[in-house]
Image 1 (tube, rainbow over the protein chains, first blue to last red):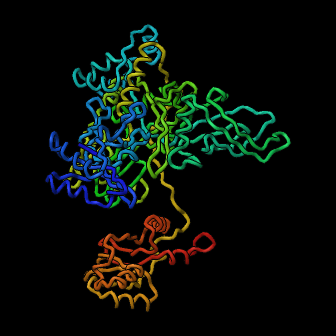
Image 2: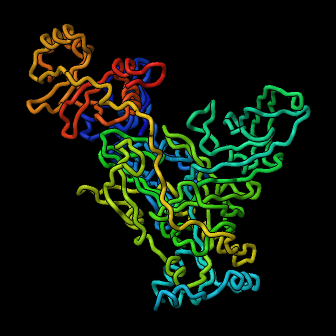
Image 3: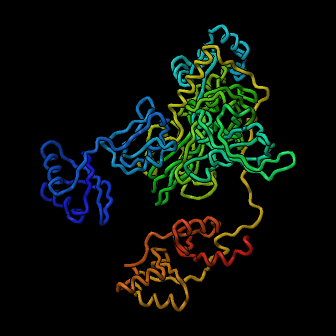
Length: 129
Length: 511
């Protein structure tokens, strides 16, 4: 499950994420981080489901950090996409590939939102949400 | 079967057109032809099939549109003209111009250009027209600012000097940095392979001997109808790299098959859809029309070496079938490969063309004149002497060792009045570099040995490299000097921006 954490100025200096990892033992992965003195935004991947996931989300909430579930990371505009393939080999996690009929296919589970494909696309059909 | 029997005419283009008129021509896409030849053999296929349709859809930079705007009142002899801030060529009559696909927007830079304007024109969008002039007695107006659509233009003729390359060498990158090229994003350390071309669907791969294609051949171009008007620029059929010059009426085209594109940190281009019908006039043409991806080979070249395309080192020779499989082995490593051109769209174009012929809305033509089938492309030879690194570098290089003391080295730099100090091991192999700035910081923080503070990823130059290339490299990395190394990475000299500027006099070089 991918989650976007938004830290308010009051909690941005607290080690909320580290405490959640230590307390739950779940190896949460940071995919993207934008932190400064006023605000923090992290995109994390939580390798957990069900009760454990809910517990982790609850811990963030209690610590004053807003946790938004990512339902979609990449958006491919298939009206623009020509299925050329320019995004496929630069993708470091092989989240983009061809279907047997040579149209582009995106595997959400593998994507780490690195944005390599966004600039690799010659017709700018890919946006990261 | 003898060579004579293979080239014996089975059917003429006129006979094929008669069958199209009657609605009983046998038309196959190139993919279907391949399957038929595999299952029934080339003799049967040659007898049964009248036409094979090909297709390709890729970035074709040598593309553009001739435009005529019509005269305003009072009239203007446009000397400069922009469409959506993209400059067009105005060295023609008063209101004629040529919009090239790779021209860049003067406001949006690398993200919008000629290719996008062409797509927007074909889509029927409004385009901002701006023009300037010096004013003459017959053309008094000096300025125009208005909007136009494709319908306002008298003519909009797509005329592409080089389209439809028979095949194209693939690209990879041996360096430790990402490269942004016209072949797309190339990841470091052979991280990926990018290729282009429709392979077994590619028109020129289907008639590589130019038996049926020539000047006057009617083709599918950008969704409309176009014509081959000659060999493409850099046409190089002898090496299997033929190309075509084509034209067609932009007003009848479709933006699905003409797409503006932007290659990150490189520039803009136009994806063009081209489809060519191959009349199966004899058995030889039937067999070339059935050529498969596994029979068409290209080189994978290292774009990490900033040389002209044919001098970039060949890493491996591969078939389109290997490239299209998505992985190619390079130096024992499985490297992902993907295309820049769309195979899906190439398939679609071959299908659309097939349908048009079957419906009787597209007839074949015999060439008015053949295209050269023997020709090689020449490079541009620089006849004036150019500055090389060896002309400007200093060969008396002061170097240091990783175990040297920071204070001692700082003293040396001050005494000799230099800013860059290559760090070498006992075999004089370059292992790092320190600058006066690094030393100032090291002294301030009390670091002791050079090895602790040196930069290990050193930007270098080779002796035979052009100074222009090295100057760009220094600007790109925001540095003021580079060690010059030999093939074994041993220090042979050093060159700084100071050395280069001292050699440049009056804007050009003295040697």
